[in-house]
Image 1 (cartoon, rainbow, N blue to C red):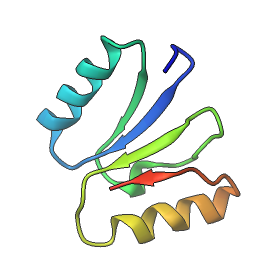
Image 2 (cartoon, rainbow, N blue to C red):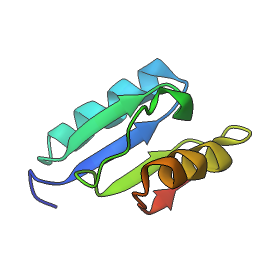
Image 3 (cartoon, rainbow, N blue to C red):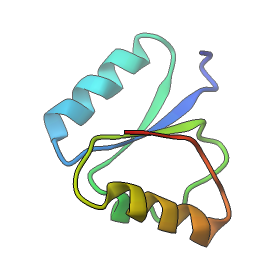
Length: 77
């Protein structure tokens, strides 16, 4: 992955979000951290992938955001 790689992380655990962000930054990957899928006001094609930690309804919420913006990204749960 290059510095142009951007990953959206959706996780309600702030420590885990921080750990993922820190770890990815050491590998030149930019992370956009979000607490919930509702925090995603606009999914952009600048991001490469969505990494979501499993909680009830997260995939449905992400798909609704993608449908609303017309931007589709792979989701890893």
